[in-house]
Amino acid sequence: MDSPAIPRTTAELDLRDVVHWLTHQASGSPPRTEQAITDCLGNHLISIVRSHNTPSTIWRFRAGQQAYVLKADVGRGAALRLELRWYLRAAAVGLPRGLFVLGQEGPAFTFLVLRQFGDTATLDDAALAGRTAADLQGHLRRAAAMNATLFRRTRRRVPVEAVHGVAAHRIDKRVAESMSYPYLLPLLTGRTVTVNGMPLQGLMRSWRDVVDRKSTVRLLTPAEIGLIFGDLHCGNILVDGSGTEVVDPRGGPLLPTAYDFGKLVQSVEGGYGAIMAGRYRLRRIAEDEYEIDVDTPPGYAALAAWLPQWLGDHRYQQALYQAAQHFLAMLPHHASARRETLALALSGMLQFQRLREALAG
Ligand SMILES: Nc1ncnc2c1ncn2[C@@H]1O[C@H](COP(=O)(O)OP(=O)(O)OP(=O)(O)O)[C@@H](O)[C@H]1O
Ligand SMILES: [Mg+2]
Image (cartoon, rainbow, N blue to C red):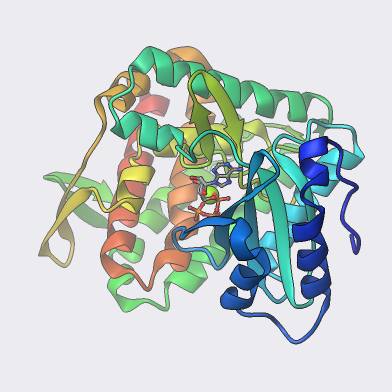
């Protein structure tokens, strides 16, 4: 973990100057500022990409003929450290390394260097730019196939109760954190919240409704876990023509593939990318009554109709369950952005409603 992997291509050998500086600076102390990292890149720097809601920053830089991406976070970088460990873990078991070149963990800063793919456009960008459903489908299939390759080679059977225990622990912890935001309480604890004229169950009741029924938990929880990207929403799927790559894997426990199908459902049906991009209208009519209208690109509307068919009924139900959990789990991380978090909470309620309909139908 302390020393970076050895560069493997000529273009990467040209990286040596930059990497030498990065590794030297990253090993120092005290924690470096973002400016110090920018200075490390000197005239190799192309641009800084500010990303949403995460402590890490992305720099694009050039070395030799190749464009790279540096993702770094000051200090030991709690989340970025897990991402680096994910790449090292995948490499250690001989799995494809994707765009990963090398990385190093703190103490001054933690960083990853990736090859730049395309012009940084994501599947969400492609959908917003009006790419056809057939085109978007191809990228989804390829991203899911990459995940399946990881999973196939690492999967193991475990009791459903163990998989459910990890999921329930995550939700209980995040719900407890969300409860410290008074504006979220009516949506979390309310018996009924009216959303777009529909009376829906509050989030905690929706969650308990599933987990208090053993047979529903068994139906919706897979008994196989393995290494997967773990954050396969459409803003982490990069597209370049018909080429597809995935970035931003999440280190942590081994997970069922349904977890990432849930991330896809959350993007395509749940409008996660549009909410993050501020493309929604939200109106509060009363404490427990809201109207929300999230922009859905036409390509995603067509994909949403195709998802149940692609996944099959059972896997689709499992993915809906995961998508609802993802909305619930992310509330505390966004909670300082009140409007956005309300939009996420309401979308979570709508997602639980789709799950109820899928289970009933
Ligand atoms: N290797 C790469 N090639 C091209 N673009 C990239 C690459 N890595 C990251 N990007 C661009 O930077 C964006 C953010 O990257 P990433 O998801 O790793 O960061 P993050 O800090 O987790 O941000 P977010 O909160 O948006 O997920 C990507 O959506 C993509 O546009
Ligand atoms: Mg990301």
